[in-house]
Image (cartoon, rainbow, N blue to C red):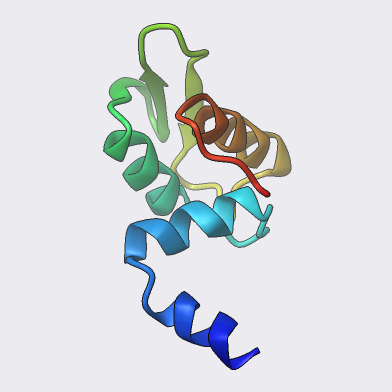
Length: 91
């Protein structure tokens, strides 16, 4: 258990955020979603109001509602799919 705790604390913020999303943690904020999508090269397109649509070639688009905190489960699933497309898995 101590080894698990040490490895968690030595992880970067990016790695912790990726792990949080892959584990299906229900308290992912819109700001965290935006950060992770931008890290992986998704580009934001304002769609009006509180929505941002992120696009990347060969990936499905993801629309984040900035006022929806925490994210709805269907958006969390889309983030998980985007991370899996980038080579990450929940294993």
